[in-house]
Length: 67
Image (cartoon, rainbow, N blue to C red; front, side, top):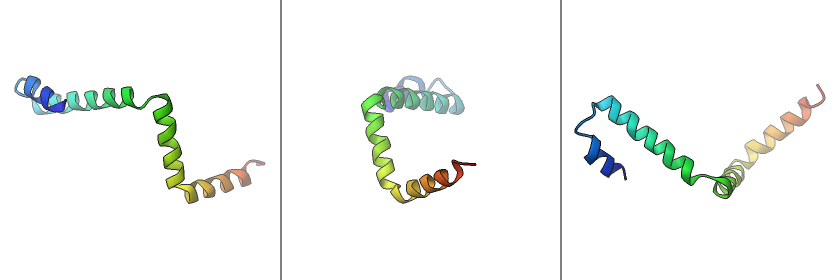
């Protein structure tokens, strides 16, 4: 998809504008793909990957809960 954008707009836009256009398209694609169930699955996978850090954070939260 980015190759099509490069062919269509790359020759007309200066470097910074083209870079910003690519960033905007990337954000749009991410927002379209990462919705609802897919986002929940990714969050669960990240939590599994960082279980020890998550456990440490829960312990710190529990100790500060009564303050």
